[in-house]
Image 1 (spheres, rainbow, N blue to C red):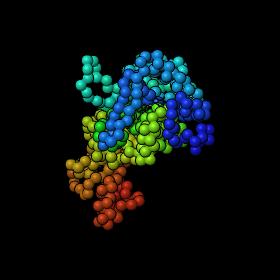
Image 2 (cartoon, rainbow, N blue to C red):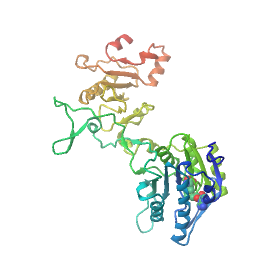
Image 3 (cartoon, rainbow, N blue to C red):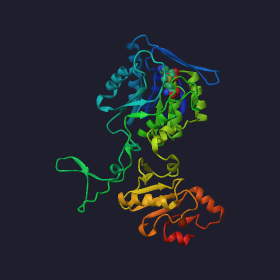
Image 4 (cartoon, rainbow, N blue to C red):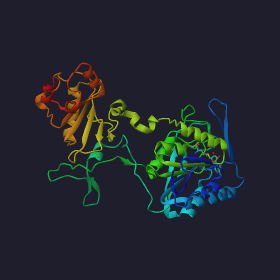
Amino acid sequence: MHTTIGKSVNSIQLGDCLDVMKSISKKSIDLIYLDPPFFTEKAHRLKTRDRTKEFSFDDIWGSDLAYSEFLYERIALMKEILKETGSIFVHCDKSGEHIVKAILDNVFGVDNFQSEIIWIYKRWSNSKKGLLPNHQNIYFYSMTKNFKFNPIYTAYSETTNIDQILQKRTRDEHNKSVYDINDRGVFKHGDRKKGVPLSDVWDIPFLNPKAKERVGYPTQKPLLLLERIIELVTDKGDIVLDPFCGSGTTCVAAKLLERNFIGIDKSPAAVDLSNSRLSQPIKTESNLLKNGRESYINADQEALSLLKGIEFNPVQRNRGIDAILVEQYENSPVLVRVQKSNETLAEAASHLLKAKVTKQAKKVILIQTKENDMFEADVNEADVNYEGLIVIPSPAVQINRALRNYPNVTGDRMRFLLGKDIQHFR
Ligand SMILES: C[S@@+](CC[C@H](N)C(=O)[O-])C[C@H]1O[C@@H](n2cnc3c(N)ncnc32)[C@H](O)[C@@H]1O
């Protein structure tokens, strides 16, 4: 329990958030995310999947003044309980975004406006006249300039040229950005590349009607969306507040990410539902989000899954390389290839070694996925420089070897150089 705000930490409070927030200590919260009624002038209702229960909340105001006053009073109070390093994320859509933005500018100041996040998702409907709404808006304001921020990097798109990732850039005499070259006209390697910094357009799938995560609460948001917000501006142990928590999505995400949370909702059914979700969180994994839309086009997902646990950038449209590790080796990139099902180890090594030359890498890693073609003489050994090539058996190959009592399953022998050491191993 956090001493400054006592017993409300890691609980869901029932009541109007205006009253509950008055009992929260000033400057004690690291992140406030709110998904208040959007000014849709509708009552939102939804039945659970087994149709035994219906959840609902009202979003009917009569005038924009009534809605603005409601929100203003509460957002002004949020500013008092946010830490100097804290941030607020306010979710809205086209019904009330103009009102929300004006309130936030007034309360937090235009200078503390950080981003308007556009959450896009694919949703089809027989829309009436006009464009089909396919996004919602999340306004991100910080309390001060000194706000906490943990950069998130995303994968390069499939249209990114591999040289753009590897090569250092500089400015020429006309101040034009060009690749940097050394005295011998050879390009220089750039610094360690982490990927592309996260943009303000977030493509996160809407929870589909059959998603296990869906609890039947109207306008329930995906955990993946909340996890991203929480990771961006908080650390483990920080306190996250959702004053309109509904089904408790923010609190579940905070719990999964080892943050503390406070949820508030004026509906007893929402409080019960949040508590039951917290006792048994269920998250729907999104392959789309994990791998990116582009990666579906041509990255070898099976191959890349073998690299889970190391940071890497997947490489698209390249015959020799599947990935480049984020970690460099002696200031040069480390290239990785996973042996494909239709190629011998020697063929795979040959593709990778060609890429090693053109990309001027010092170390390349080949993951061997098949036993045991490594002595097929389809590469002219004399023509190939194996230096810097490391062959690592995949778990499947290692298991096969273990079952056959091959000696190289553990320790240093798992990593061996193609060439002489292979003869030795055999
Ligand atoms: C859009 S829903 C939140 C949905 C939530 N983000 C989720 O993922 O389930 C808005 C919630 O605000 C609650 N609410 C409305 N006015 C409130 C108030 N004054 N204080 C606290 N909760 C309120 C409603 O009961 C409703 O559950």
